[in-house]
Length: 80
Image (cartoon, rainbow, N blue to C red; front, side, top):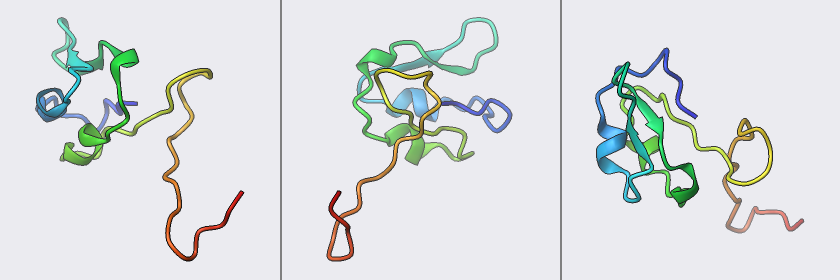
């Protein structure tokens, strides 16, 4: 998910995406998920964004508003 109010359109997310999921919108010159099915959930776009304008969402069913939750690991992780 891209929060356009925070995005300044720098293109860092587009340049660093290893699967070229993101591209620039032709009209407004802002990043869009042009190929969302190719996303591998690596998180590089989210980590590189200097404006914190990108949040990963789950692929698959749903409306796309479900946030990806990190899996707990280590000695304090609970089994489900």
